[in-house]
Figure 1: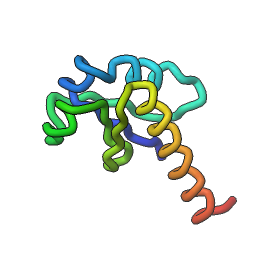
Figure 2: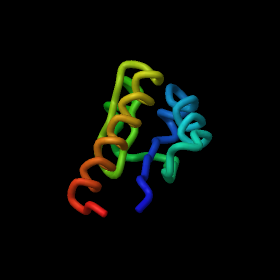
Figure 3: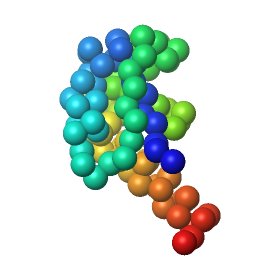
Length: 87
């Protein structure tokens, strides 16, 4: 199952466009990247870069740090799934 990373359009225009581009262009990631007009996290949207990773709020002080946190979150979820459903 593909991971889902969601971004708020206002946050993208202010902080996270580079993160969206990096996720979409990374050949090692199998994620759906979606941008919505609003995700309902107005306080976070105004203050710092954020995204929802499979519904979980991930935020960071900078876009570069957000990208690292998103990738870490995706890796942790994949490892968790592998542990729950070994081949």
